[in-house]
Length: 423
Image 1 (cartoon, rainbow, N blue to C red):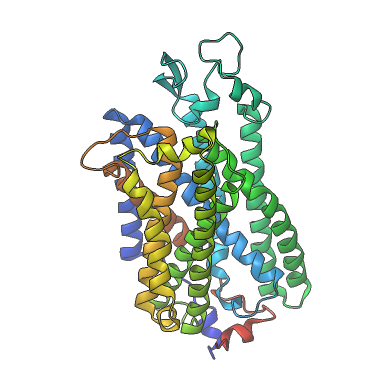
Image 2: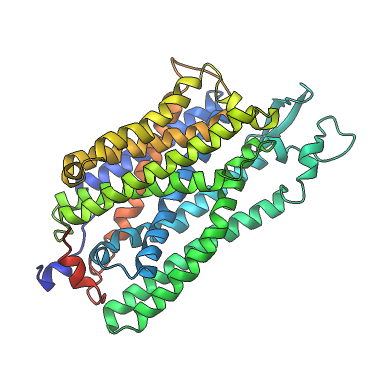
């Protein structure tokens, strides 16, 4: 059992960790600037949306993880809660950045060729299938009857109201959980824990209804002619697995740096079980969505997958299922694998990169399409933008963690159960 002094130890964010984060941010900013100034503005916007969405989803998982633990009155995770709580503190920054990317992608315009009329018009970089000026106006050169039928939902003011509602609501719920946890540290007792339980249950109810809509609006509306009722839950599975992978990787890193010394292989085993189980869940949703549309072969449904079967994308389409299902299935299936730090760390990296590819396949065909440069569809803009956002997340996360007074919720009612967790 740890001594109280070790609980009061604070994380120090300095030295190599801080330098690496800042260098990664600088690389990202440089690559994004080069993307805009070398004629790849559309692709750069697409990558900004991809990483802004990924960044935000990972932070949202912090709220979901904490809420599930409180609602389930779980004991095993009590000593780990500072890590997902720090994700929550980063969420408002991620939300604002995503909103700025979406707004810039809609309001900055460039010459495009419409698919319906093959005419050159000026349109937005993102969401051009429904945000294009005149697309819902009868008699317009770019009028689209199908999009006009959806205009009551897919219009710019209502779109931003919804995004603000989702992201603002998730942030408020999350920050309330952090507030009550901090109050619990100072006051003890059960009052703040009961408040956290109530907030967690309310959040999970709201989240269950709104997370599919968040995915529909932010990602599915890039291909506005197509729709899938499974898409929202498919995105939730990707969000949850990638967020758990980032969380687990940070647990391992912090433990190696001498912090969170009370984390044991039993705690990591639980995280590995979550990653393994929800990778299977993601696969089920991927397969169900794909198989039904492939079998029915209805043109308006098959068009989504047809885009992703272009020669430039097809290898990545199949590799997506390999890296996000087969790799974690084989790596994490054995009990010993989930208890071996090196193996679990490798699995986290595989899944983080794998779900980046998953988001890539959701975003790129509906924004830039098959426009190759260098030797592959995944080039320097993709790599550089990923590095930049990884550096930004690292900087914000470690900076927020360094301001936490105690790395463990020392008055959590299940703390001793977590410290003695064994499976």
